[in-house]
Image 1 (cartoon, rainbow, N blue to C red):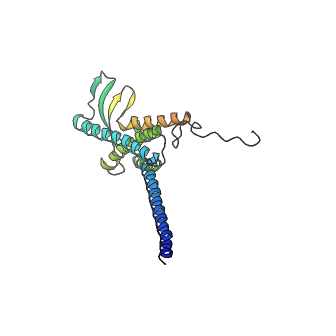
Image 2: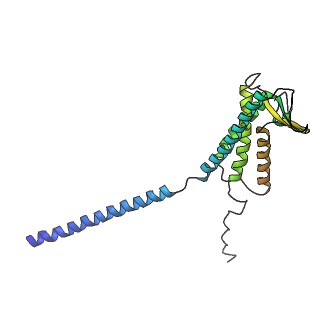
Image 3: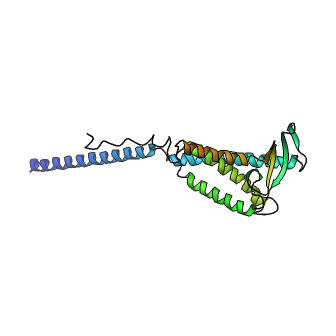
Length: 218
């Protein structure tokens, strides 16, 4: 009886040991999976969106600060010379778009700029290219800078006149936001022409894996 009982106990103990080993293996596997998931880098889109918003924030801050200083320190109609009469500080109120274009359509420009801002933020979540993030950030910062004037300066919301203060030769008077918007747009055009898409890191076709040869080619 004793021998039979001992014999029956030993397999049971072995079964318990096997189950414990299985549990340890499962736990270890689960830990490894967890570690791998933890070590997985964040999607590139989030980093690019942060870059886009950082560039936009810098442009917006510079634009607001320089406009406040221009309004406080300059008098309309009294240019302050920087380089003779070629480059001057000249305070003007602009009801049009960048570089004083499309004056008289203030509320339309405000709505268009608002739509552009929303579109850029939406597109920013899908960005992979850092250069596209910089270009869109320049446009976003400039658009927001002028939108602040459209909403909060006289004569009223959607109709506010943008503060411009820098005059260079025959070029229309402008502010920090204007060259940011134009520069960002030029950068995006150049990137597109040279094959840099917003959803790839390198040039178009460079990051794509080569197609496997077909049976006929082999």
